Length: 157
Image (tube, rainbow, N blue to C red):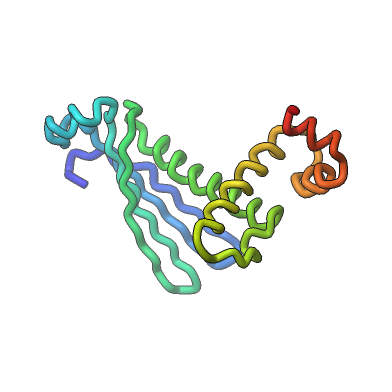
């Protein structure tokens, strides 16, 4: 970004799998860098965020830059770095459940609207199963398949 960007929030993590990951976050106030026409179109944009991420896996370096716009006026790069990282954690967790609980990767529906429709139904079912009792999602799914009373309870029929 530009020289007057607020930089900082360098996050460095190493894992036991030989991976080294670094993220650097820079932020700018949107009013100082966006054109007036953009500011009027996006009334609630206050902050521009740039995250430079690099991962070294088995000696090979992978780099990427991601840009975000925010409606928050927080001037702490660590905050935005944590938000960006947290987003991917939620995304990865969702996909893990769809694959493990609903075996989404094993589904062979590949034509027409079938993949999109089935994905929507799985996400809907995951949402319903996630807000009930303390059992695992797999157990709740199994119980709902066998017990019509439990199914009615989680569907609130």
